Image (cartoon, rainbow, N blue to C red; front, side):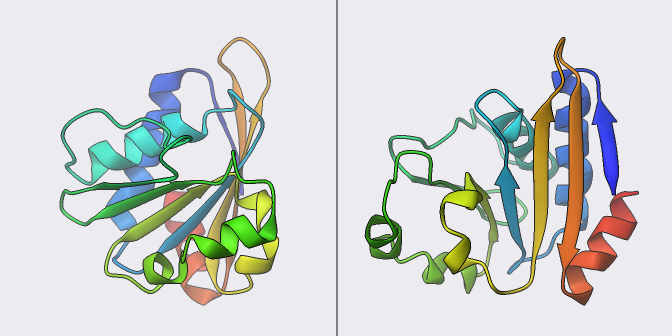
Length: 149
């Protein structure tokens, strides 16, 4: 499914919509260049989950946990440059956890994501316009894409 948003608020609204239909154990992988709107989408998800407080990209921390209706595990792989560094994070705990896991810069670790997930590619088209491609890998996530549309 291909969507377009024309403002940060619309991108956040999409995040809210996605969060409302997510369940604990769901995995969402975000891809896109710097400034494409990945964190903006996660901010909307956090709002949709009833999470208070600021949601920032965990670029230097690598993993943030936010608590709301469901726990949101927000992971950022941007600063990691090798498979060894990524494997050392022990991300399996999050993927098999009781919250919703969102990974920014998922393209840096394709070896980790052979399981079912929702893939979201964000593309900056200029002037706050974003092209957003949602792809469900596995029946659960194909259904999520259908519900978003």
